[in-house]
Length: 302
Image 1 (cartoon, helix red, strand yellow):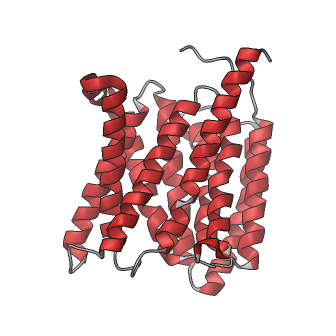
Image 2 (cartoon, helix red, strand yellow; image 1 turned 30 degrees about the vertical axis):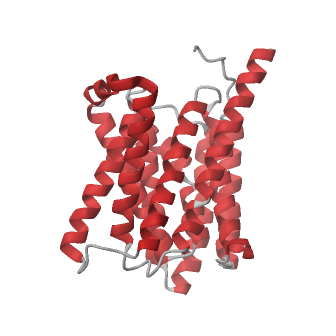
């Protein structure tokens, strides 16, 4: 590997690692909510607006007013990807409020495997043997966590975590369907759709249009984590193979579980034994998949 390749690889590694670590603070942020199971839709409305606003500011700074032309190039793939990502946002919050942070985060870790499976089913992309084996291994981990949540009466939260992972996978596959789709614009669509859908749910199913000020600040902080991580990850994607991003994305999963577990943030949420074992199995599956599909990366064209 040349010196230039080493430099670009290091940039991609740092950006991807930073994105995962930033996202990992989302889990303890949700745990600080007041009456979390009452204000999910309010929280999602504020978070969606925050994500869309930060991405709009970033594009305005990066591309100027010409960024508005990106919306004309979104197409069906961008709309579908934005909706998939929006529902991933939604199911993450519901997963976090119905089951342990560990279950939700470990389920999110299966997203690369679902993306590989969907790409094979809908895009007819070649499915490597490593991907098939990783899917089977991760299935064991998911079953173990489902067993734990079933006994604990929180199986609904496990399902939300599963749907969250599928939503992220849909977003990833639509980008592979049309690689020239403006990624940042798709994320803006996700934030707007999440906010609008949440507003409808608030009007239909809740008695109050407001939530505690603390929850508003937390939702804005969480939205900032999400938007910042997505920006860093998208920039770093030019420098690393996709398989290595899968490995580095585990920092979100592992970090989030640790932050909610250790006393540092005051959450003190101890995962069940089956959840930990199942999560460890999923991590092995993702690592095996990443190593088995690893490809060399060429230096980016800047």
